[in-house]
Amino acid sequence: MKSAVLVFPGINRERDMARALRMISGHEPAMLWHAETELPNGTDLVVVPGGFSYGDYLRCGAIAARAPVMDAVRDHAAKGGLVLGVCNGFQILCESGLLPGVLMRNDKLKFICKDVHLRVERSDTPFTRGYNAGQVIRVPVAHGEGNYAADEETLKRLNGDGRVLYRYCSADGEVGDLSNINGAAHSIAGIVNESGNVLGMMPHPENHVEDIMGCTDGRGLFAGLVAHLDRAA
Amino acid sequence: MKARVTVTLKTGILDPQGKAIEGALKSLGVDGVASVRQGKVFDIELAGADKATAEAALKAAADKLLANTVIENYRVELLG
Image (cartoon, rainbow over all chains, first blue to last red; front, side, top):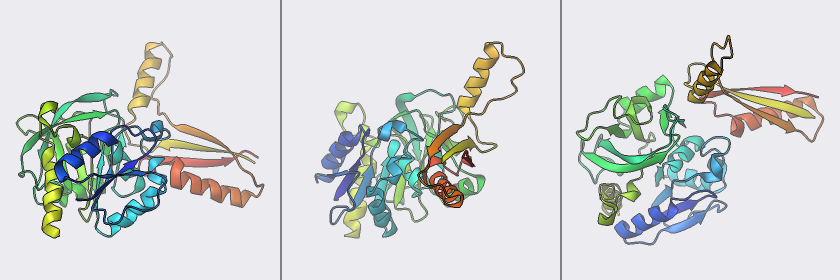
């Protein structure tokens, strides 16, 4: 799997992401500066990592979403190429129009930095095939604006078309107000676009990939992507 | 030419920051505050003097960047 990790000023999780990609795919990812206008040849996966691009000025992800490199990402996505946005990356994908909706301030106004549980809603997608449907995984979150919102029509489509891949849940997989850490609509933690090749999620799977991290539940996402591409090749 | 673009949250969109400010005003004893919604103001200076061009540019600025029209409305004013 050849991957490219986008780098914007203020992004700070790109090296964690690159390490996870290198470890699981066996290939060194390209680090791509925001002013670039082309992706490296043969890029399978574009990753928009977490952080605070442009200091969260204006709205989280708003400035980064208009960077030159995003046109190349749009072209890649339009051709069916895989795109993964994590945390600020999810916010950037929403602001760029690659994903619907918006990430609002957490409903309790607090920055949340802790491990959470996610329910994997289906396993038949490139982003979840490393897991079983209904499986509960533990991954960290670190965000102040992760409260997913969209108009009713969009939410209906996301739910109805099986485009919610990850939801916040309790340790035993229960989805409800108690486990909905940031007030997100329908406990949404991660969604895909209509054609299923662009995923945005608030939690950080790249931070639970090695034993030394205390948990390896995040590996499945990357391993699933590698398996998906191997099968397609 | 000077202009002002005001961006506000659409009705029905939860505004936790506005709620927190509302609570703070109430705890300060400021009377008669029913509710608070927080928005943004952009003061923009335009190079040209043509009104129609300016309005079109400001509208483009708001649509493309200043507002996220999923959750926000905006108003453009030319201040002369």
